[in-house]
Length: 408
Image (cartoon, rainbow, N blue to C red; front, side):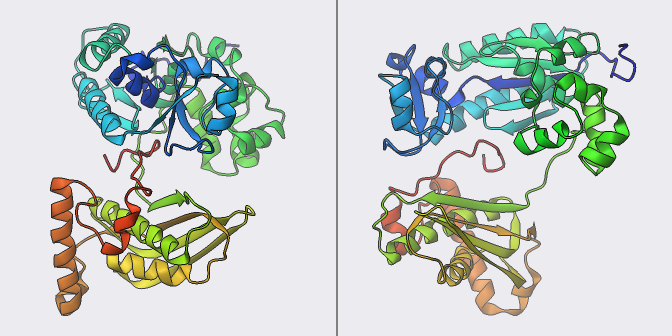
């Protein structure tokens, strides 16, 4: 079949993806870990889930999300390391600085990956040459244990797809000339955005491979499979045309926590919820946002899910208000809790909340909140916090979100 309809332009998007980022960073900072199976966890217990694993561990069957106790059976001698956010933030900033040397149009999609758009850059060098230079600079400027995959394509989707073809330390290009050949060697779920449910919808109309997806009729995708403009977007995306050139807006800010002990008192659980509220409030204000909605949930030992939510007439953003609302909702939560979580939603820009001009109490609360934020920004999150959460800092630690860089 001809490549009619495929984007014929020279690929100008580069996707950079650090290999097993957290594990590699730990191996870089601790030379004795190099060459050994390493698993990064958020809590040092055998029942904790693995956040990421080194390639030595992955080679023995260790996977992200697996319980450490189960993973240790597959990889005897598996070393569990508690995550260290400060290290990962440092490497994130180094990676961003290196990528920004080649184009002003750089977007980090997560803490360990991002893309460079060369369309508006006057550049006489081949992107392959630049890609190998970035690999070299990562080794020289961060450390020899740091490797990355690089993909080059005509749009963001194909660049990311190319970056996943040969891990670890690969560099691949996808263009109109090798598009079909590349898809022919992949499974449907190898495509970013195609998981279980979406795979079933495609299978229902006879699409079982990436090539069949590529050759599918535009109207079938739009009217039958996706039943929305998403079908049209997938039709273009698969052919190398750009449909993902946008920055997503923050729709909610939240945190969750798995209780370290199933025998905690109710007051102790409330203190941990209070800790989450303080963290959410700080992150909300860092985005210069206010919220109108709040959502609280729990998961029980019996794997049941309970939630409660509330929309408020007036916007809020202070830790005290967020905690008050969350505690009110949490009052009806069931017993036997193993996980708690909350988020705020209905976000809008903080335009100094005009109602404060007419309410002395709200003005005082805003000034106090701004003063505390200033101290925490300068000396570190939770330098100043509620006395009620004093005993929770050791357990409820701030972790690095994989899928977002808005707090970095």
